[in-house]
Image 1 (cartoon, rainbow, N blue to C red):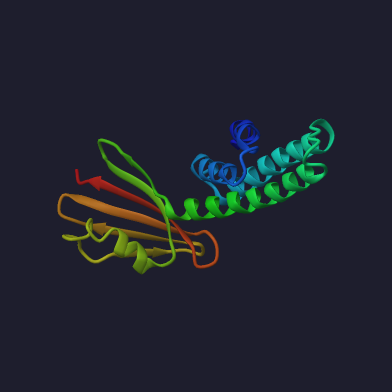
Image 2: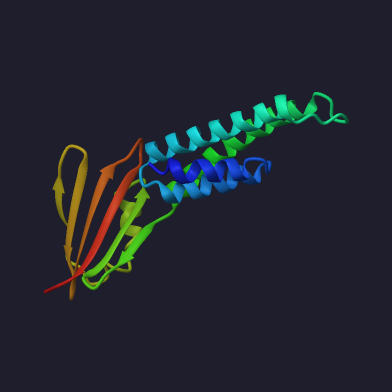
Length: 174
């Protein structure tokens, strides 16, 4: 878990209304590789930062010209920031791709909603490829394609309702 990085960041930026939710959601989506762990990290850090700033507004800061509005604004902006952080995290997590290039080839991870979407995303790699060889199991599909000079393998793992995590590997033929 990346809580040791996210909690200090969240406490450092949580005092900035709306922008803090954007920052925390964006950073959490890139630091966590698993959606559920990322969601737990996001909600934990946001909850701790919200509690910290609400207690600070209630008991420490006394702003005479605002009266009792500072704690109210603190609660409202904390709730808004948690919602914004969640929305940014979910959108960024499912729309981004992780790609690594090595001497052997390319490794990439991304999310898709169907096999057709995957084929559409990697169609440039499949120009000179043969028909796919499918290997089906209970919760994942393995696809292997032989191409001229390289092979394309990808694994579709169910990651929620109408959502698949795709692990793509393109290797040179030996």
